[in-house]
Amino acid sequence: MHLDEILKLDIKLLVAFVTIMKEGSVSRAAEQLGVTQPALSKSLQRLRELFKDTLFTRQAYGLTPTARATELHDAIQPILDSLSDLMSPSSLNLKTLDRRFKLRVDEGDLENFIEPLLASMQYEAPQVCLSISSWGESHFEEITSGNADIGIMRVSDTPNNVRSKLIGYLDSCIILSEAHPLYQQNKVTVSELLEHKVVTHHLRSDHKNSFTKTEQKLKQRGHNIRASLETDSLMVAMQAVKRGLALVTSRSIGDLFLQVMGEKSNFYPVKLVEIPDEVIELDEYNGRHPIHICWHERFNNDLAHRWLREKIITFMRESPWMHPPT
Image (tube, rainbow, N blue to C red; front, side, top):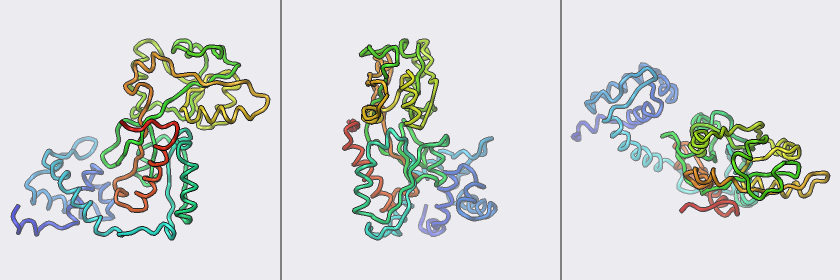
C-alpha cells in the first residue's frame, strides 16, 4: 500500500474493522459503535476496496473472516492499542480514584485474596467500591457484556476478546463428617465415593471447565460424576455434610470449613480427605487446576483496572493454597 492509499485510511475505518471482527455481525458491530447498519456497511465496503479482499464471508451463524482479514486484525489491533495508550492518563491517583469495580469470583477462590485486598484498598484507594458476586450461568458473557470488570475462574481457554492471565493452580479436596460411612478411611476410591451422596460447592461442569476432560475419562470407565446437591452456599454445604454427604470443594474452602465447624457446637467431627488417586492419574493437571484472572480487552490498558487486577494476582499467589505457575 502506497502513501496515497495509506492516507485513505482513518481511525474510524480501523475501529469498524476490528469491531466487526469481534462481533461477527455488521448489525451487532453497528450497535456497539453507535452507528447505523447502512453506515457501517459502507465502511466495510471501503475496507474491502482498500485491502482488495472480501474480508468476510456470510455464514448461517454470522460473518466469517477471510485469511486476509485475520492477518489484518493481527496487525491492526496493536496499532489501536497504541493509540489507546496515547489517550490514557499517564498517572493514577489512587487516593482520589472514585470508581466501582464488578468482580465475578466463586467463594472458594475469593478466600485466597479478599482479606489482604480489602485491607490494601482501605489504605491505598479508600474511595474505590467493589461489587463482588459469584458466577452465573453466562460466564464469559458477563465480561463481554460489561456486567463484570474482572473474573476469576477455573478454565483452560478464553474467547478472543477476553484477556486472561494464569495466576496459579489450586487443589480440591473431600470433606467428610463422622456421619459419613467412609469417615474412618484415610483414602477413598472413586467407586466408594460415588456409592454415597455427594455435594459440590462452586465446582461446576461446563465445556470450558478445566476438569471437563477428566470427567469424560471417568465416564468412559463407568464412573458417572453427578452430585446429589450443588450449592453456592457454604451454610447449605455445612448442613449437607452434617447429614452425611461428602463435600467436594476447593482446598481453601476445606480449611475454612474445618475452622468454622470446629467452633460450632453440636456438630459431628469433620476431616479432609484427598481426591482419589484414580482421578489424579487421569487428570492432565494432576489434580491442581489452573486459576485464571480474566478481563475484557477494552480494559487492558486501563491504569486503574490494571492496578486492581495486579493486586489480586499478587495476593492470590501469596495465598497458602495457591501453587505458583511453573
